[in-house]
Image: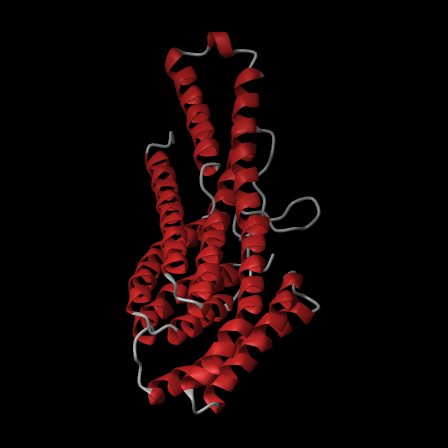
Length: 323
């Protein structure tokens, strides 16, 4: 499976940058700064979901071997497909690409507070030119992935249209000498493609990351429960051995419960809602619209905190995992 959402968040951040640049009001600097900090935290939390995919698959493979002593540990299965013994079920390069992609949100977020102020025109032009170059490469990469015969990432083509649209919008910012004249239509035209990209990212997180992890943890629990309940010699086992088996079941059940509380796709959804409110505030920086930005941002920050708490709890559980 290829998990190449590579650099798609650049387009999202570009949209935030356009919004931020078009809003000179000092009141928007604070929420943009908060967005940057929360996104840095979210990047770390979401990255752990990606990095642990292969480890979860490997853990399940060895649990299968443990619970089925007549099975052999092999490099390939009966169909010739590599097992998780040495092979990674999920392409590590694709996983790392997504991690880099998410971290770019935070990296670019640092520029938003500057762009929200009175950035010099030459600096604005430089940033816009650099972003256009990056996005053109990004669009080409997604087009390549979507049309590659050996790629499983067929959804990559969905990103090409929105990214191309944003490239055209930012191109107008470079051409226009009058900043406000360029930015107002950019905000209006950029809303749709940026929202589409966020929609695609949310979908991909649900399909590849959340579904895989949720299924994996439930499978782990089901196997442990079945092994315990079907053990005909259970009543003759030493107390300590039964305790060990029940501790494993308890931990697996806790993992299932914890992972169902918070999901990374919800964080992306919260990001989209902040974006929508920023668009409204960019159009009309009224007290009502600015209040809506703060409300959406507060909800987003809560989602990020909940996701971080989930990651921490899962890690703490693994530290005490029964060997």
